[in-house]
Structure formats: C-alpha cells, structure tokens
Length: 178
Figure 1 (tube, one colour):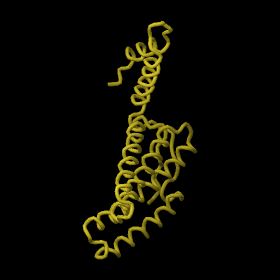
Figure 2: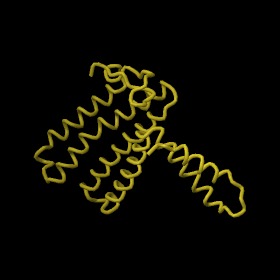
Figure 3: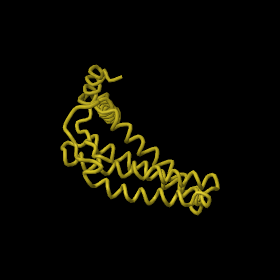
Figure 4: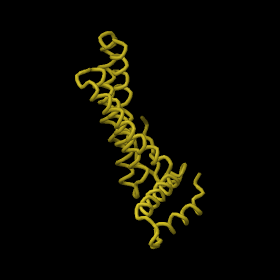
C-alpha cells in the first residue's frame, strides 16, 4: 500500500510536465493525490485521526440539525464533539515537531478522552429513557470528569513526553502515577 516510489515519480512527472496537452486540473489532482499518499503512508495514525474528525463532525451536525430541540440529539452532538476534540488533538500530537507542542497536544487529547465516557453514558441513559433513574451516576460521572480534567494538567496524569520511536510516534507520553 505504501510502495509509492513508482507512484510518486509518475505523479511528480505529471505535476512537473509542461506539455501543452496536459490539462491543469490533472496536474492539481495528481499533486493532491501525491500529497495524500505521502501523508497517509508517513503516518497512518494521523491520517485516521483526521478522517475521524471529518466523519464525527459531519454526523454530529447532521444529527443535531435534524432536531435541535431534542435532548437526545443534543447529547449525541456533545458526544460527537468530544470525539472531534480528541481526534483533532490526537492528530496534532502526531504531527508535532517538538516536545513542548507534543506535550500540549497530548494533554489536550487526554481531555477529549476523559470527556467521552460520561457524555456517552449520559447519551445512553437518555436513549433508554433512564436518565432520571441513573441521574446520580450521570452527575457523578461529570464530577469525576471535572477532577480528571484538572489532574490532566499535572504530572500526576502525564509527566511529559519522551522522544522515542514507538510505532513510528516521534513523541510518546510518559504516564504519571494516575
């Protein structure tokens, strides 16, 4: 899938060619395809995170705008927003070029990951008409989320990032005791 040498040279020749018979849109299309192939093959995790951002955004907006007043649709929109947050920060971590940026984006994607569970639980209780029955758990989940969101910015949660190659990740988070 990532044997792109022949594909790159063909695409580059197409982009660089100045033949009269070559349509300019073909050059643009070839350049875009080349960029996507290189990007995808260099870091599949970052590419998947971007796809996740796009699909979660579209589906979340479609559900919310289908019925803006529906509590269920609003909660699904909030759930999709936490996934978008997590995925965008994860993507940004993957493409970080220095340790301080990587640490910032790691803490931000952990914020999204922390928020996903209680929001999804709340959405599920609403879907099952059980929000009142499990109200204490929903509220408790949001309280724990708040605590962990604060702890995310301390060394108890993430001590920093190390510059080591693990699964082609340039920077890897160093876990704290929590």
